[in-house]
Image 1: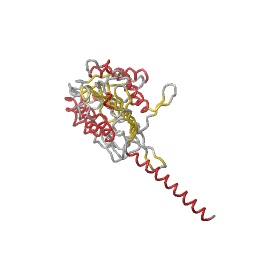
Image 2: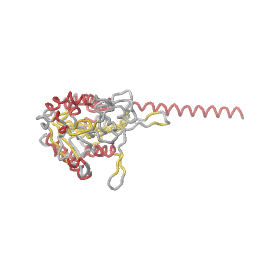
Image 3: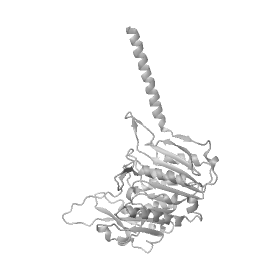
Image 4: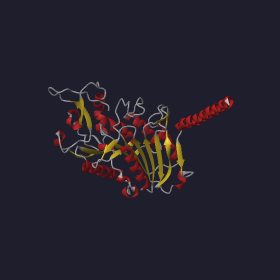
Length: 378
């Protein structure tokens, strides 16, 4: 009987060990993408790919919000759902959707894949699955790999767009942007370097939508200008950090004459109208012609960059660049279309317009008021 029990226990241990090996092997294999293709060759279904859209939705942070009825939502998931609707409504487009998600662990040790990829062409879902955003990789390396894989050998589309939805991208520093990979920095320069890989087939995006807070600064637009002809961004806070995507549906009807700047203004106006209906604080959305704004950006670059190197203990606050004498230049309004509405209450309710450019200034000292340092780069 003892011998039988020993054999039983030994067999049980081997079985458990086998299960562990299978489980660990499966978890470790999560480093490679797990993409399901619904066509052997997605490009074989191409009829007319006039538009190419790349959505990057950053969800590795706190994106929860409540609507007026008290319903709770995750803004990144809302943005992904909207992007998929855009993809389904465009019969002449290919659409790449990357959802950068928080890292999750199994058994407190093994990471699951932290990215979701979806690919549409001509309104049809052709591939989807999970991929890993590894600590040792640059911020956009896995997305670029999938992008190149699925558009390989395909001629560039007539009109190319990129849309980034997420938190404010720091202009320096950048640690902690990914909540689950806090030691890996992500800055505007990192973002620009990632865009370089996406634009290799065609040179520049025709339209970039930067759906984040404080995207309209001289430094940010200057760094991103080499990779996009037109940029839509907010120079101020952007509520929920997400711009409306409805104008992107049926681009074959919206962009019949390929006039991207005119479409960008309609897109910005739609986002502005949606925000002003739903919030009481200030709303600003701007459209930047990157060629026309270059003169202003270059003329203020050195001074603005110096503000980014000021000691973090300094008491700084954001402001409209037009409120600072140095930035009051004849070229300031050149190439910028601004949609602005002041706040419904408070001191900012008195501000009647905005230049479309956001800067830093020292916060005025107030008697008997404790000055709390404002982070420069977040």
